[in-house]
Figure 1 (cartoon, rainbow, N blue to C red):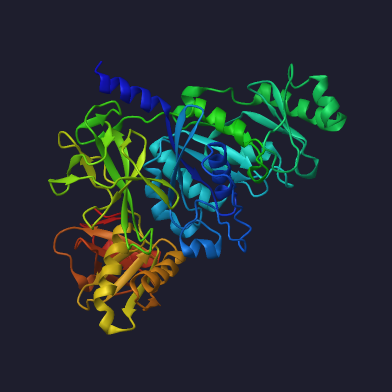
Figure 2 (tube, one colour):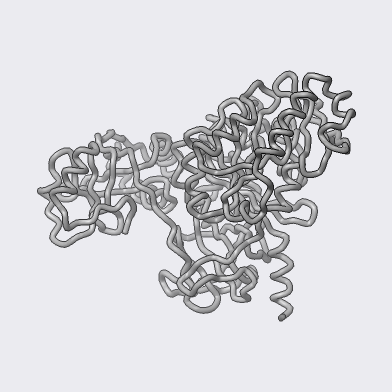
Length: 526
């Protein structure tokens, strides 16, 4: 084994790259903050609720996010903890930001699913879970807000199975809940974590012989201890046993209970997660599976973000390193164009705080300064023609016609449209015959962000007129006749000149499919 291979093996073993997925308000930004706090990456966790204070959560950096108190774009944070190098991809929980979120999940090796103890599995969690499940990546569940009144742990486990179709194995179990919460029992390590009720630096942990230990009775009282014993006896008999192989295949999710805002159960979760979560794995490409320890550098762009620093008008391409050692200033081949590119200003992130990075390894996410040469899905490689599996695009569900209020600003308008399309904020379509510009998005908030960013980053006021369409289908076939798509639908072209039909309702879509039996109607671009 060469010296570089040994170095790669050591670095890959240390790395854990994961995304946190959840519905809005489940406490995702708070959990991210607390994890960064353990890594010493930030000194003071900024509560998202304290919006009037000047301290904002580290992972929310865009102005519109600070105003609304939600994560709008996926950010990347890196920190070290007990010999591990951790990359967190903080995905937006807001339902309208699915597309950017979905793509970010392709750069993760595992996912942490955050669930509110009172609300259980919510709509957005289901969508994000399905993207992870399709890729078969391990999913770890953190049931949050245990210090508030919520549903029974058994109800929540049943819901995981019925709604998401995944079995679960509780790694710890609450002793009481809401106002009666006095701790959690760690099933794997036979210990009790005591709940102090506010953000303690040190959580008190006591070793016990098992859940019947009199020490727990003394601490929790008879009623709560009897309840704990009944619950755990039932779990021992009827619950799923822990099976690491099933966890790795995404068939079984380890469940942890805690309260991120009180820092309760977070450290236990992090330490267990680091033991169980996978290190960077091989990725599929046109050259077969590429192992992280392959000495030739390779990676792919999964996200592009313009104007991360509005003062500099910069664009950053986010690159997931798949194999080899990244070194600042190295030259790589961009597969789409066949050109050699020098990677001169690579950066690593703690949200919007960036450091120039000299070296990075498989599993790391680096930001590349982009003068407009990168596209989402670009593969970069040092040796051989390695192209990684294409990143999916998702079918928009809301459409609007866009016009510029000031015709003299056309150049800035075009620049804004081009950049925001490349970032994946919007999809752009042109009507066949009329040359109108239509925008398609997965959710309404994307339009608000589009208007906001066009105004404040490009100096252009735009007007959006909502269109009645609900479905987009890419149409593939010979001799496509625009006249067949006039009733409750319209024919447009996407930015690559593919034909797309926009339909007002399902009936119009089914009618068009019946009338065009030789054409294929696809949910995503061919």
